[in-house]
Image (tube, rainbow, N blue to C red):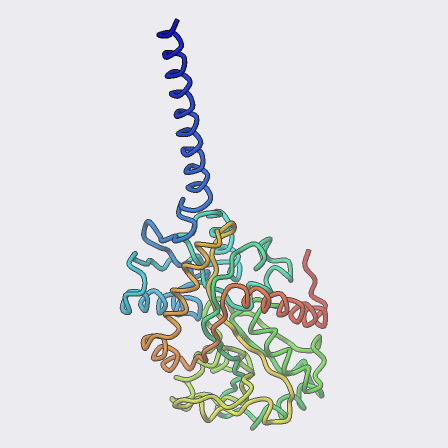
Length: 343
């Protein structure tokens, strides 16, 4: 009987130890599931891709390539970067591609106001809310250029003629109607008293905008500041005004007058930043925020901004999200003025 009793005690002790061990195992498992599984300190596990939702050479493409180059040269991110062009639909083709990468943080894309405008005017099913804002990096501005022999010396002279004979003046841009080149011109012209719906805007998405301006098929070129610099240097065109708050700094651009200094109290900011696919985790967002902030503060990016006449406009993910929501409301009002409605 004594031996049976000792055996029973030993068995109960063993069961108790097993139960305790099982409890510790469960606690450890819960901690791993909530804490370690890559959530606190996520890092990319493969090469990274930045999508430029346009052809080569434009603002999106240049921004993507200069960022990838900066991450490599400054040794900010160890993984390699590839830049891929997904052209079409004013950006919609690229956005559709990224939407299919939901939950995969190894794919990013660069965007600017068309990410708001294209969905609002019904040309894309995807808008900024469908993606993960990472960081805004720069601001650029619109420029309104005419041929060197054009009759207008400033924006007020141009807009006065547009009020009198709008059908005689053609504005050309690379973006589709209701997107950036159109809207930036409308915003400034409206502030000067021009009826937005009277503006004759032509879209030339085949890269022929400057050619059409120079050969007389168009009268005014609405574009980014950078796209006008070389032809201004060559003496072929004049910039009547830019959409910046103040005069820009740098060779050539410092001579471009702002709309505001001509008495037109309005601006247009071409913000440009980076987004990820849907369903990114907080840890993944935090990783990229840190890396883009480091890039923003690097010598490479300072030199890049100077080279392309870009201004610093860094925003982290949450700031960017709030900014985009506000900008969307502003863009909707301009589209309403044009009587452009999404489907």
